[in-house]
Length: 567
Image (cartoon, rainbow, N blue to C red):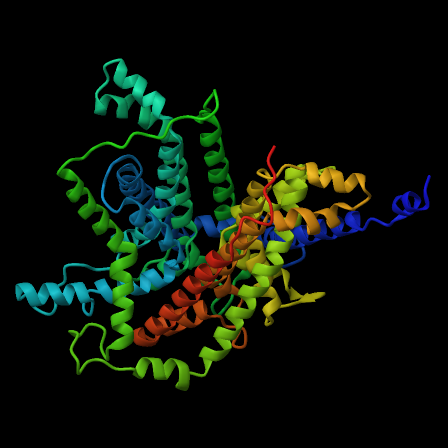
C-alpha cells in the first residue's frame, strides 16, 4: 500500500461527529419545547401529574366557544379556498384565457404578503365606519354614516380575509396537478365520444381530486393555526379563536399550564390532518407509464375568454390589488378613509416611522439579523440533512427525514408556548434574547428548506460523489466541493423561502418577544392595537419591499450550477 493510500485510510473523517451534532440540534429544536409543553400540560403545580388542566380547558365555556369558532372558521376557509382555487386553476392551466401566465405568477407572489398585513389592509378597506369601500358605497348611494356594506370585524369578515390569503395554497396544488395530466387521457375520452364536460367529469376531475382534497386540508390547517388575522379582526369584534385564546392565557395573570393544555389538542389535530393529507395523496395518486407524455390541450373559450380574464382579475384583486392599494393610500394620506386629493397627501407617516418612532430601527435590525441568520443556518442544516436523507448515507436516515419535517405539524403559537416554557428556566435562560426567536424561526422554516433541497438532490446523479469517496474524500468534503455547487439554484431558493418566512412570522414571535427583541411583525401588531394605520402601512410596505428585493436578487443570482449531472 502506498503512503498516500495509507494516509487517506488513516485520515480522520469528521462526518460522523458533525451528523451526530446535527441530530442533537434537531432534537433540541423540536423535542425540548414539546417535552416542556407536555410536562406543563400535565403538571398539577404540586410536583405531580394530572389531567385536571385538560379538564379545565374542555369544561370551561370560555374555551369551548373559541374551539367551535375555530372549527367553523377553518371549515369555511377550506371550502371557500377550494371553491375559488379549482375553477381559477382550471382557467389558468387548461384554457386559452389571456394573461394566464402573469395571473398565475401574481397569485404565487401573493405568498409574500403576511396574513396579518393582509388583515390590516382589509381593515383599511372594510372597517364598518372608516373602511374605504364603505365610504365609497355611502358616497355613491347617499346612505347614512351609521350604515355599512362590509364589516370586517365579524366571523364572516374574518373567514373572507383569511380565505383571500389562503386560497393560493390550494390554487398552486390544483394548477400543478392539472399541468401533470397527460393529454393522451383526455384525447382518448374525446375519441370515444366524450364531450368537453364528460371528459372533465370522468377524467380531469378524478385525477385532480387528490390535489384538491390535499389543498382543502392545507387551507383548513392554515386557518386553524393562524394568530395574526384573528388577533387583528376577531378580538375587536369581541370573540376568540383557539390561537388568540392560548395567547390570552399569557396575559396578566399568566396561566402557562392552561395554555399548554389548550395547545396540545391543537398540535394533535394538526398532526392528524397532515397524516390525512398524506393518506389522500398516496391513496388517490396516479403514475404515467411509458415515459414522456404530451402537453395538455388548452380549451378554446372563444368570446368567453375575456369574461374569464375579468373573473380572474377580480379574484386576484382580493389578495393583491386592493390590499396593496389600501396600504399605499394609508401611507400617503393623512386619513386612510378620506378621498385622495392633493391636499390630503402627506409624508408624515414616513417621518414618524423612520425619524420619530424609536422602535423602527431596532425592530428592522432584529428582523434582518434574524432573517439572514435563520436563512443561512437553516439552509446549511437543510443541505446536510437533505443530502443524508436523499442519499441514505447513514443508518437511521428515515429518522432524519422525520425529525426534519416534524416541525410542519407544530403550529406557530404552540411552538411559541413550548419555547417559552423550555427557555425561561435554567440551564437555558434564553427568553429576552434573539436566540429564542432564532430557534423558533429555524424550527418553523426548516421543513420547507429540507424538502426543497432534498427534491433538488434527487435530480443530481451520485456518481461524482461516489468517485470522490473512492479517492478518499469524506462525505462532507464531497458535499462541499461537488454537490453544493450543483445545488446553487435549490440552495438560493431555500434561503429565500426561509428569509421571507421569518418576515411573515407572527404566531411564535408574539409569544417570545420582549421590549428589546421586537421584530417588524410584532411592531405592526402593537401599532394596530393603538389604531395607527398610517405608520402600519409604511412598515407593511417596507416589509413587502424587503421581501420582493430578496426575491429579485435571488432570481438574478440563481444559476444552474457549474455543470449538469444526468443519470
